Length: 134
Image (cartoon, rainbow, N blue to C red):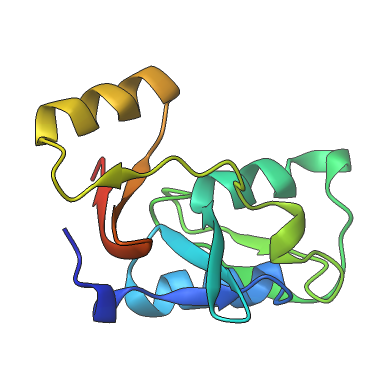
C-alpha cells in the first residue's frame, strides 16, 4: 500500500499528455483524479491506451509523447492531441472503496469480480491507501 503523501494526483482539467508524463516521471500506472482537491476518479494507463486507439481511430498531431513500458513493451512514441483530450473525458468515475478494516482477501475478491486494477482504501471519508494488482 502506498502512503497517502506518496499519491500522485492530477486535476480533471489537465490533458492526457500531462497524465502520461506524470506516470512516466513517477514510474506509476494510475493517477488519482481531483477536482478542487477532492478525489473524483482514477485514470490508468489502460484508460489512456483505450482512448488513443490505433491507426485511423487516433487523430494525429505533432506532439509526441513517450508511453511507459507497462503500456507498450517496445516503447513506441504515440502522437496525441495533447491540448484536446482531457482527463475528465477518460477517467473512471465509478470508484468503489473499501474501509481500512477490510481484509486483503475481500479486497482481492472485489478487484477480481469488478476487474479493477486498483482499489482505494478509505477511513473517515479520506483515502488512506491504494491496493493495486501490481
